[in-house]
Length: 638
Ligand SMILES: Nc1nc2c(c(=O)[nH]1)N[C@H]1C(S)=C(S)[C@@H](COP(=O)(O)OP(=O)(O)OC[C@H]3O[C@@H](n4cnc5c(=O)[nH]c(N)nc54)[C@H](O)[C@@H]3O)O[C@H]1N2
Ligand SMILES: Nc1nc2c(c(=O)[nH]1)N[C@H]1C(S)=C(S)[C@@H](COP(=O)(O)OP(=O)(O)OC[C@H]3O[C@@H](n4cnc5c(=O)[nH]c(N)nc54)[C@H](O)[C@@H]3O)O[C@H]1N2
Ligand SMILES: [Mo]
Image 1 (spheres, protein in one colour):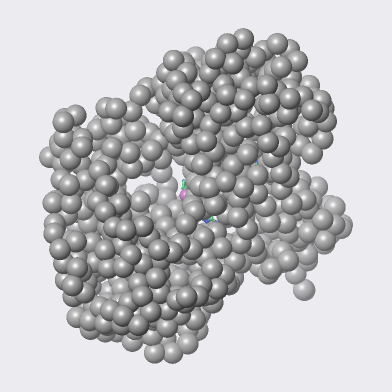
Image 2 (spheres, rainbow, N blue to C red):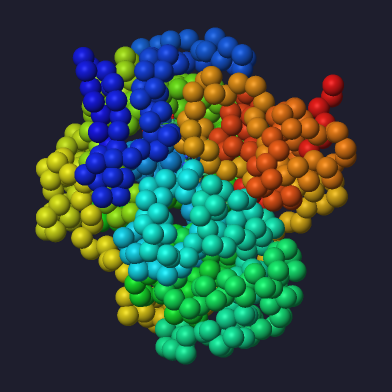
């Protein structure tokens, strides 16, 4: 990104035209970061709790204190809890935030001071990542530029217009070459308009769609005759696929056999790439779902060659030397991220007495918002560092104001491509804000672990980039330009050789489970999807007022009862666990068995989807079953 700065203020933020992926474009949510820097709601001083939070005026429950007082208090609490109950009584939680590499040092502080309790699992990509590690030995993807070799591209559960806009130019180029585009998604998104085939399966049934497709590929002899050479468990896999007919597999999906036959033709005939969205892995069968997509690539030979593959991830941190993070004894205790609220409260021997949250807003972003809030509020001492008084910060005893990514130095990798970049402070930090690294470096000194934090930002960058130096990538070069990691292959698993113990890929051969079925009482799946304007919950105050929007198919409203639920009117969205007031919007692109709400709605404003979502764990990778929750809509009391 390029920031234009005048008189110490950012006047413009734009993409870097020389960056080969972003090509000068920025997504809407990132453009909004300029506003976040100067947002009047920015925290400007540490705050200590003096009373109970009233969501209407949350700040009034806090009193301002100096940084000196705040750091002294943190140091004394950390030392006290470690002495009295051991370091496991302190829990550090971090999620996405800015995804800067130097943010790993926050965890390093707690490892060095403790090791303290940390989280286990991954609510973002856990199931899919674990699935690909099992199948291929690693979760990596062909270079984006390799899409030019694909005859067919499947956007399986992916909505690039909202959550991966930098893919769009690559898709447009593919369309010019007459590449076939397919969307498989319970919602028809903007990209569907340019697709040759649009399939809207019932939510959560993709594993069965994949089994049906595999069945058709076997039936029609469209399986690569060499598959046994690179696939482990082929007979077992085939037996699983053929234990039912394709039509039988399709029953739960609502998809017609003729559509899957067309899909098989497109997928089985030329190099075909599956671009995986991440929504469908946030389900009880999410790991199996990605494994079944991997297996399609395996049997059809769509792997290890140009234009093929199952793209899920690009190893965001690969190449950076983070070996120092493993320098401490194994972490003594972990808590499951998807079940965080309950796990914090249930922990004993020792109990969790202190929680410190960095780069995260778990009250809004983790399932069972209410329980997460309760868990944080009921600790002896909860610290949250953030730039804003988020729902999570409102549950803290002490809030520390931090810098945003435009006010600090860092390094960054990507989920979706192999380029890495330097992050540089473009303006001075807002009044009173300190970076996480500054905070933990200062605390390290006060808690007797100063030796664990020997460097400034530049020193850490050198330490972390040092494995890349022999490849010609130095911090100095990164200051000038973004660089593609030279070891990242253009085509992964080339020659169909996999980094698994046998060198072959592993085909899944255990049947996937079904996701919970909607019941007459709760007949609709709740899909909480990314929206263009915001990263997660990082919205402006003004954007979080009034009821959140809920999109449904007009037929869904009709099924509820004539005139009960109307377009543009308010209604109540209820799950077994809670309810939200919503504004209903009719949208015929939505599957009739789904309700779509934005992800990241603020909890204390009554807009958090996660207030309705139970804390359940996925089949692999300890993710959260965000999208399995079933709900109903009822008319608001008039
Ligand atoms: N604007 C914006 N962009 C973002 C983010 C953001 O918050 N805002 N978040 C970033 C982050 S942290 C991540 S991890 C990625 C998230 O990447 P994704 O999870 O891919 O992002 P979403 O756009 O939320 O997409 C979820 C998709 O899954 C589809 N889906 C839901 N259930 C099913 C199903 O059963 N089957 C199929 N086939 N599809 C299903 C939904 O319709 C939706 O299109 O995006 C990143 N990009
Ligand atoms: N219902 C539902 N829930 C979801 C999802 C979903 O699809 N549906 N998606 C999930 C996914 S993919 C993800 S990745 C998670 C994201 O979960 P989070 O990462 O917790 O979500 P964000 O809303 O981005 O909150 C990040 C917070 O960190 C702060 N922050 C940013 N940079 C920094 C920093 O450098 N230092 C500090 N101390 N703070 C910083 C921001 O101000 C913000 O308040 O949410 C998950 N939750
Ligand atoms: Mo994520």
